[in-house]
Length: 308
Image: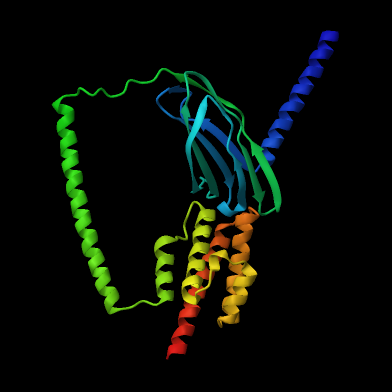
């Protein structure tokens, strides 16, 4: 009788535990998955560690505020990369995927470990900061694979010589093409002298792109470009001035109120990102990019009116 009662109690506990696990899984709206491409890695190869965040809806639903690089044992970090993907499920729903990849170089044979990675993010719909942590992963470092031998004979030498010849021809062709291009560009510039605003508008389009995987670095490049424009146009040390001093100096130079407002908005957000580690969304970055473009456009129009 006691055995039957004990079995019934254990059955109830197991049932309640299973039900709670299913409920938690259903309530979670963002999924974290970590894995390595192989659990057995030769000493002379790399451990490729993937972090995958997946959720239903648009990419802007969640803003990743911090990814803490995992601590490792018997490994050293070589580099990392990231990408964003949007797919459509069989039900027609958007599935957003953010992938981060770390590359680790083994130190010696034996076991290696990658500790749990910590992801901190903001739920834009709920305006709530949350975090995720993954489990620890073990990898076995095995004997190195044999490298290609150096005594391959003509079967190795001849293709190598052909490659060198093709590469040399390509380099010569490229250098001639660049020389001709520079000569044509120099000739064109002598015929048409571009204004400072046209120069920085061209640099904006050539060197800074709206679609980027590293918004913070691109925003830093955008700030450097705007500082360079003000320094060259008005002969002021914009790079070393505070925002308040710069705005006062620009106002004294005769900038319109509209241009000053857009400049003030840009530097305020850029400094929050640089010094306060504030996150910046794609929409914020596009707006700041547009602000710089509008400042250059307005200044070009104002200078044209003054010279006419």
